Length: 151
Ligand code: ZN
Image (tube, rainbow, N blue to C red; front, side, top):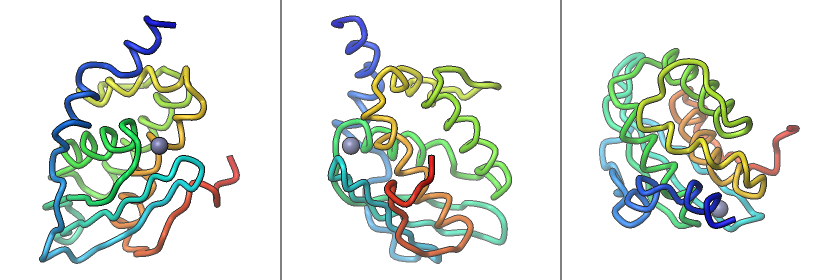
């Protein structure tokens, strides 16, 4: 159990939870989306500035558990400069990683999320920021909830 927890709360996740990157409102955002996970109480707003198809800037605000915050921090750090298609491909890859522990392709620092699959209650926490970012990047500007999924 101790080993599992150590893996889940990987040093990188601890660090991102303690000092989340891009944790601020983005005044010139042109895409905003909200994500909530009622089961855990995670609630975030994601701000994106898109230039055509490319993510120029990505920030977030809100509150939630360590996993959701670290996941949001990691993804805002890793998706800057990506195109909408690349964001979608990465989301698919990370979803596999978080739900199965395996990824297809190099995820860099996002691999820190691989331990989450051992804790089913935390999977939605880790995926929530991704759902919100996907909604923002795709310009859906809506509130996404982990409870509206049919997974
Ligand atoms: Zn959570």
